[in-house]
Amino acid sequence: MIASSKKGQWFELIAPMEWQGITSEQLFSKVWQAPKKLTHLLKMNKEVMINGKPAVWTNPLKMGDRLQIKLFSDVDFGLIPQYMNVNIVYEDEHLLIAEKPPGINTHPNEPGQTNTLANGIAYHLQAKGEFRQVKHIHRLDRDTSGVILFAKHAFIGALLDKMLEERQIKRSYSALVCGKILNKKGTIDAPIGRDRHHPTKRRVSPKGQRAVTHYEVVNVKKNATLIRCSLDTGRTHQIRVHLSHIGHPIVGDKLYGNSPKETRLHLHAVELKFVHPLTFEQIQVTSPIDWD
Image 1 (cartoon, helix red, strand yellow):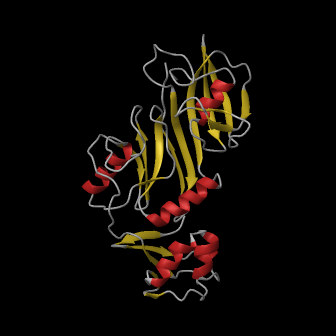
Image 2 (tube, helix red, strand yellow; image 1 turned 180 degrees about the vertical axis):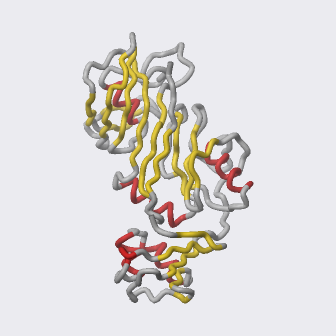
């Protein structure tokens, strides 16, 4: 974990021993793998300082150097802040993790849309006097509940996007499925594409994108099985499509199963785990749920 702090609009880090000898250029391009466009803007605007002076990007860093990056400028939220009772399970200056209840969208799908979790996050930030653009790093289906990661500024958003792409952000889900799964664990590796006959539905298709879901049985009930899932990919409706494909649709899934009596989809994001890309702190949050 790196010593860091927020000072007004600036994020300050004290260079650790591991950065000794690398240049500011290498820090941004190799260590953080920051996008070239964002790095170029920081350079041109002189928004990176070393020991109180504009960074010379080719100079090597020394242990104990004070690195400052201007990350906390006020920007438009990009959507309409709206009060709602949002449960924030983790938050720092750069990111936050919130619990999404079932029955609401993660983010607006069109300008001016409200009643999404992102609207509630924007209100939460506004109430704290933080004017940041709300960016979800991943999403959950409308009827799925659980933890979601949001970035509070563009730089951390870009780093987290890269981590998600490289599977460095681990997500686990709890699902109650129809029937008894006999294998204690398994992997479903089946490509997913659009269903030609339904505008929002997906299906396993040879022409679809590769999708991999791992599952492990937690408890076998009378007519259902409680499982824990993790993903190697993040396709739309992936867990729901895959479990339906193997004959065990999720309880309450009206789109991919047949549970008209159930009031909700029994799918919940229970855990999120990753290393903070700026402070290198190990972040692990859980959101337990009891389907009984």
